[in-house]
Image 1 (cartoon, rainbow, N blue to C red):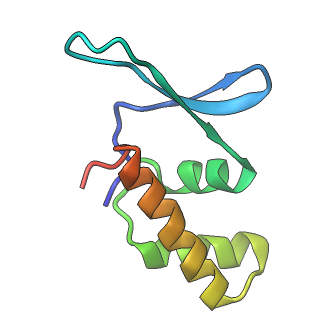
Image 2: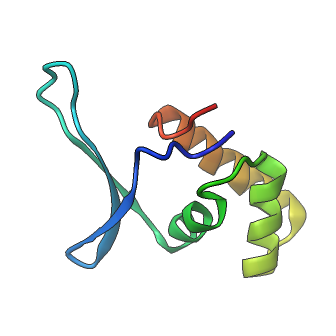
Image 3: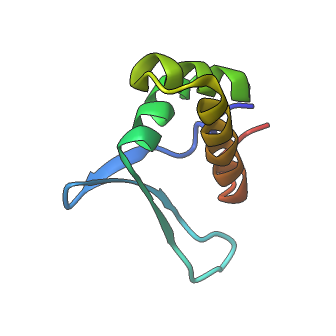
Length: 89
């Protein structure tokens, strides 16, 4: 999987967000706020293909958490990106 290159993180009012513009006449803009660990993962995984295991490895390396917790959190993060349609798979 890969984070879609059409989305960029912006800083607004001290928060890091991804803005998804409505298209094809939709009158809806979505803003997705990234917490510190999500921003870390976004920056680490942007511009490259990655698997859930790569995300878990990054979490273990950066935060020193156990592998099972890292895999659970990595799956949740990837699932949320997929749900928000931020991945180009």
